[in-house]
Image (cartoon, rainbow, N blue to C red; front, side):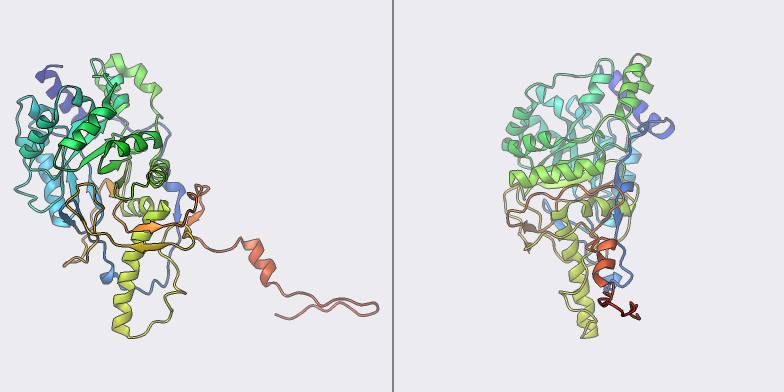
Amino acid sequence: MTAGDAERRKRDHLRLSLEGDVGFATLRTGLDEISVVPRALPETDLADVDLGLECWGRHLRAPLLVSCMTGGVSEAGPVNRALAAAAQRHGVAVGLGSGRVVLEGGDLSSFRVRDVAPDVLLLANLGAVQLRSYAADDCRRLVEACEADALVLHCNAVQEAVQPGGDTTFGGLVERIAELCDALPVPVVVKEVGFGLSPRDVTAVVAAGVAGVDVAGAGGTNWARVEGLRDDRAGAVALAFADWGLPTATAVRDARAALDTAGAAAVVLIGSGGLRHGVDALKVCAWEPTSRAWLGDCWRRGRRASTRRRRRSAFSPSSCASPPGPPARPAATTSVHSCSPDRRSPCRRVRPRHRHGSVHTHTSLTGHRPSVDVRAQPPSPPHPPHQPLGDHREPEQQVLQRHAPRPEPVTSGQPRRTPLN
């Protein structure tokens, strides 16, 4: 692919994402099938809710990431700068589009955003398949040129296979990722582009030494359809992938199970793909039982602050309901880890010096949490559709049977009496 072809492709991506029908035909994220149990009496002041955390040397005011989108053409510069400025304002992370053009000697201006976002966690980006052409020194040069804190490797096998002239040399990439993780001085993250990372893929890249995984589940932008709209030669093939992939909710759940099985508590799990608002982000966090511990800790810290001001509370800590999330695993304990010089160390939550500002974004980080000792409990099965997360109540029929008054025994010649409620 020539430089001119690459620029034309990037411009088409921007135009079609704004104007074309590039979503999935019927496949959805699965998040609409998840309900969160509301709390009418949360016993917590909203001002005391604390979502701050430290990740890879940067402070975030909330576990949110504006994911990698574009770069390499003049039209991409204003987009990246606007996203970076918004991330700076709200204290969240932001990623850049593929930096392949930078390594090929192209214009760097669309990737220069550090001046408008001096404090954000900034992620550089490169296609994983490009590791066949570029070594660790090239990746280090890309990270330094973008002034980034980490490098994202995006995996877009379906997109490359559908587009005419795509790079389909996928063999041996896991080994190359492992070599890069050993050589690069910054964290390496592996992400999909909208079809979801399978548990097998998650296990493979964790063994390679990545610091984070972004599942990028199905339900948002379908890049096979984007390529089908770009080129008539790819149109018919792209239609076959109109509903391809793992829905976001499934991808997050399966990735968490894979990380738990691998004992990879230090790996940051990022749940993305079709998230529309903050409630979707909450569901991504609450969907996986172990990340619920992180949400619960933020909720409990806020509640303790409110309790200290009132000097007493209507509920004891043991009687307070849990925050939204699936049922707690028995005998769970939490502990906070501090970051070490090891780039794969877990992130450390801290109380921020300022209050969280809300922002609608595309992704939610779910890996920043205390480690949870689940005492050899097996992974929780998936919730059936429309079952509220964190609902600890017994089935209604059992509750009615347990609490219904028992009639007195009837003896011969004695009429049956109905107890009064």
